[in-house]
Amino acid sequence: MTRILNRAIAALVVLMAGIAGDTAAWAVEGPNWCAHAQRHLRKSGQPANCAEVPRCVRLNNYGCTQNHSGTPFPGQVTTPDGRPVVDEQKHVVYEHPKWSLARSVGTLLRYQNDGKRTARLMAETYAPWCDTRGSKRTRNGWGRTCVDRLPSVPADYRPRCERPAGEEASNPQCDNCNCPNRTARVWIRGTARSIDERIDLFDASGQPVPAMAQFLKQVSTIETGYVPSDQLVAEGIAVFRP
Image (cartoon, rainbow, N blue to C red; front, side, top):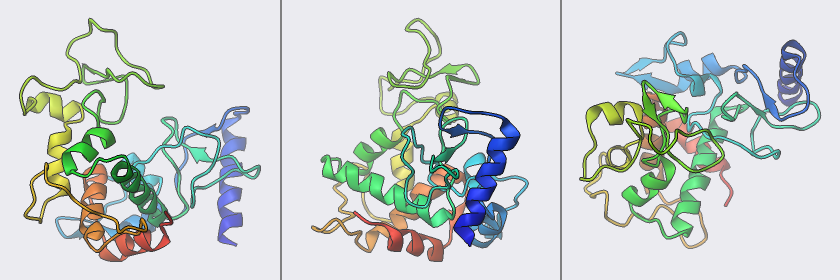
């Protein structure tokens, strides 16, 4: 019944938007997103205020994952004809936020399989220096420089999102661009590790080890600004499949 309702919601969005052809990229929200946020997200110990949460929370997408393909991710809301529902920036709309955390676990597994086994190396792939926060072409004047499928600024544009000459970028840059070294420090918060120490988050079979729960919680927190509940993190790990 829930899945039928979700598809009905997606169909209604199609009808209201009057858009045909491409994968769904409309102004959408995830089913029961406010109830999920109030139940599972905290800031300074208080439940999330639904009037103040960022866009990804409204999508039940606590990892702010994107889908540029025509194939839905596990737990992604789909249209009646099976197309994945995304927002205008291709952020996934999930039926329940646990699926977004499971997707983040899969992303971390891919990084570790590629040999990225430190927080710094994973963060530099997850949130590269070249990207603005939110992956927009510009953010408060700072320009996106990644060479990929999304719009970026020309080579002579300034100021630019890019790796600084030293270890630390300026605060204005990090307010508007990704600063993966700072991201990595948040991810390992509460551990005795440095961002350049090896972290094993999976066993030999690709299943998450106990250390994943705290790491995943920090990954989600830096995306949304809210701390997810232990219950939700456990549910996300439980539905993950390598």
